[in-house]
Image (cartoon, rainbow, N blue to C red; front, side, top):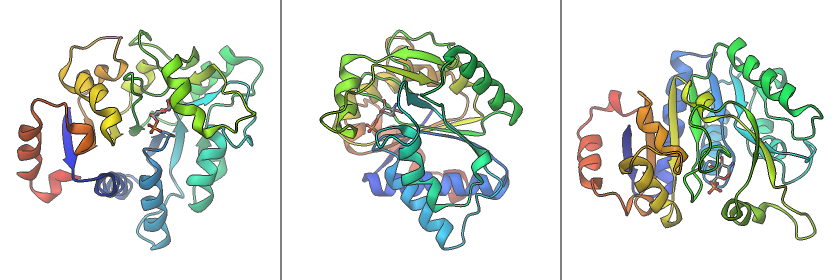
Length: 260
Ligand code: GLP
């Protein structure tokens, strides 16, 4: 696990965009696993700007999103489908048939989940999986005690996650309690992981993820077993890390070619 502490969310997002841009230079047909939430919004803006400046081309990229609410049609403003099109896809040149997001309105959820796993395999697997993290240490929507080898499936959200995410819903809408999410086993098969966390609200779950024991109570702690996981933090999200100075010195001492 490589922990990279940046001064603020802006510089963390720029660094994440450079890492993705470098991957696309090496592999223009890369498969990206994408995430929603407030955390990756600046990264998406950065990638859009790079695309507009002609620095990055997504025409051969394939994407798979992590999760979606069950029962929401794709055009619902609080759906992750809507989020992804509004905040990223409609601004860049990824062909629509190369974009995959779980469909929360599907009737046969188990069959859909199997097909989603198969589609990831057929695409050659995910090269880079982008992740945020919940306050309780969840990744995707894999809440604590999720099987650490789980695959794409339906899950029930915890109270804290419902509260944290209800800001995306209008008052008259009820946030769905069920979701479809890639499993932890699915995420762990990605070639590389890029987890972003900003703000003091994430400091506790980040300390547990990076320095705590590996446990299903903190699903993100499984990343300790991934050979290529980068954790990009701002100073606030790093406040509970006991080895922060070591991570900082290590990263600062790297030559530029190793930083991205
Ligand atoms: C939701 C999403 C996660 C995301 C998390 C944190 O639970 N399913 O993928 O990482 O929220 O969101 P935020 O970045 O808004 O804190």
